Amino acid sequence: MPKMKSNRGAKKRFRATGAGGIKRAKAGKSHILSTKNRKRKRGLRKSALVDSANEKSIRRLLPYL
Image (cartoon, rainbow, N blue to C red):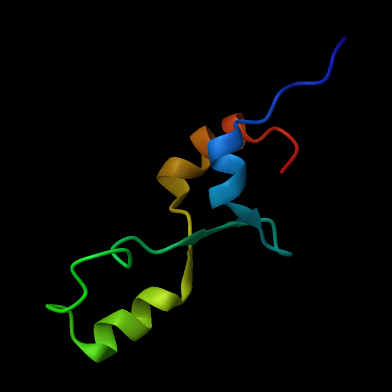
């Protein structure tokens, strides 16, 4: 049986953590930054974990994650 293909867009956006979770970047850091305060923009730099409700669909996109 051939290898399964990973979704290339998802592969660039998600990484696995050591504990088996899925790490993601936060949204809202690309434009319209002048209206967001410094504290809010600093918080957007940090990574977050994918919610358990979405984890199953992302694992389907990335079979070897």
